[in-house]
Length: 444
Ligand code: HEC
Ligand code: HEC
Ligand SMILES: [Ca+2]
Ligand SMILES: [Ca+2]
Ligand SMILES: [Ca+2]
Image: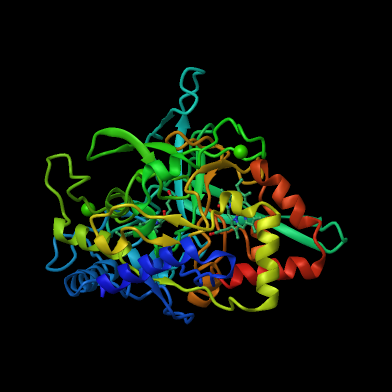
């Protein structure tokens, strides 16, 4: 199977080399050999079709780990939840492997938005430094097991801001306001920085992990040397296993270096489950290493849904607008993966629509909270593959880092900073050109 794919890719390269402009371009396959053809609500739930039999088995174990409901320990199965936590399973936040809903609090629908917090270090020498908040650390756990106390009660409200396109059509953008109250009724420190984070979809992440750092470095333009108004640079974050500062690529601010650390942090912080990377104070841990490895493998080996309506005239028109407006400067249309220990992910031509770099998107989206090397206005370019399936997977889901965008138009209209020119281009389009661009995004 894998050999056949390799040969196909080789023939394609040969074809490109000598056949000239007449050579038919191969249709883009979103995830290369990991691409699956399904646009239903299950579209994010398939194993990559090119997995070996052994890896398929590991993927099934990972599926079980991702779905496992944890309970307060000690217990015979899945013990260790809490004492404080946000949710009791990976699936609980990444529903059907898609993004979460912007909801807070308990009940049948537990918190899916995370609240990251920190205090500013406050010295000019440490502009990006951040310190944990007493009582909260770097994240607020607003749920707790029986007998323990949640760290705070967090409530969410939305503020609407009316605006209009250049052609006069009205729209309104909403942004979240969080209220945080401690169990004793007091408020958090006034200089506390908060950052709301929506659970992102988990398909295609192994491929993003497999892109060489050198490939991403080549996309950086920190001083905007080419003068197109777009800079972009990798985040630098702490790798707990390597005990070193390394490039970051996962999370909305590229605040995590790899899928193992991201997943181990999720067990520890989101679910309160100590594990090999984040043990308890005495060095022991609640989660078996095999379960962590299985969950990581699952996130690495999901299939990526194929684009749809490639030949639709409106979609093609929208794709041209996407390029003309400069969206593809950040939302890179194609990347090549390098070597990855999961060999099925290696050397794939993929279409994630991201450069994995940080960009300043302006004051509208700013959380004011530094994360690694990322400043309070920087975000990682969100991958756009699977974007059109967002509300097929979960009807009440939404876009952008805190789920503030109810529509794709709103997501675009929030862009500012380095993307201001692109956004203004969109605001000035005719209604039919705007609709075409959105049709293109929905085809991803
Ligand atoms: C309480 C909700 C919640 C739970 C539970 C949760 N996650 Fe997440 N997950 C998030 C949020 C929010 C982010 C984005 C974090 C950020 O930007 O800092 C995220 C990010 C991720 C990412 C990186 C995605 C990307 O595009 O960069 C992976 C991988 C991931 N989670 C895996 C897991 C695994 C594995 C589990 C179970 C062990 C889990 N998550 C449990 C909310 C959750
Ligand atoms: C300067 C880089 C840059 C440019 C140019 C840019 N984007 Fe983005 N885009 C981002 C970043 C960064 C985010 C994540 C922002 C956030 O979540 O706060 C994002 C998020 C998005 C999202 C939401 C994705 C999600 O998963 O929620 C959509 C849709 C989107 N962009 C479409 C576009 C379109 C269409 C254009 C052109 C009109 C465009 N972008 C231009 C950087 C850019
Ligand atoms: Ca625990
Ligand atoms: Ca905490
Ligand atoms: Ca530039």
